[in-house]
Image (cartoon, rainbow, N blue to C red; front, side, top):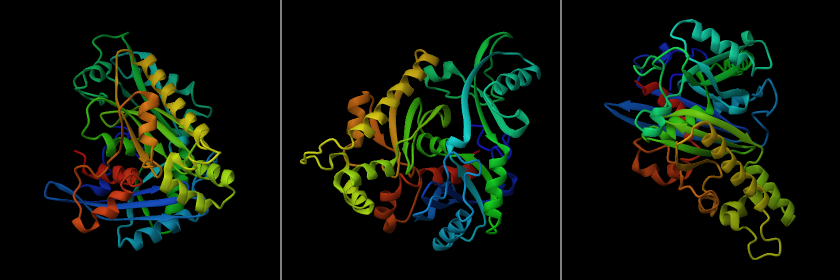
Length: 378
């Protein structure tokens, strides 16, 4: 997808990494930092090292313009050091809730006036001056979605609307300039240089659907929230966030059982959605799980309304709670769409001796892997 960078949205890869064979991805989420180091050896991409650091304090503040806290840069620096990663040039993800991802419809014009028409339409959805945001757009090839042969059309490809006045769907991604500046400031304080910033949803799509044809719904279960996105050919077609995450589920268990958060987290890992199944408080997670399945159904309905005749090929689960026992089967049963745990390591080599440990963290590393993969795109 051509909109991955909002430090330079029209470029595919920053010139700083031109010719390099290494890449570092950094995913700063609410209460954890995940880093990966990828290297290209001949034609094979190899995961050389990774690290995950968890914190009690929030690194990301939902609803705050600043978004990322000052001490986050230090945590990133320490995490990189613990993994023996000496590179100070990194690709960094920003949370989807900081961005505006929308699909608009405008009549096609084969001239520079098309940019102006899109700018006018985008300004209707942004509550600030258009000059205060960085945005980019891309035509969605609906025929490509239906035939599953082309996915999202990238700007500059041969296939374009045949005549002026044809109504076309445009994917638009917009981010406040202030957020970009804030991330650069926090990382610079720790002598880290941001090669590029990317919205985490796009990183996920790259890591989980890079070799897949068709349209997939990705459910990313984070600490504080769930991100639901529809992806085709690594591109984002629809993105929604709901206020239900792994921590909320853990708190529900802790409150119901009158136990500590850490003990509740352990029970969640061991028993999954079946926690307290033999207890009179059976179904303690049912409300949270119902919210998730309900929002998945709503997302699919919205997609079907916009893209008639396009099918969802599957649901991919990712994030820290993706492997929760019973969750995959529950979603597949409730939604009626084949559901699998995402594997961002597919097609990536690594040392056999770290296989078990790495696979147990693969879902949590999806965004960081997607970020690093940018450097090896053609």
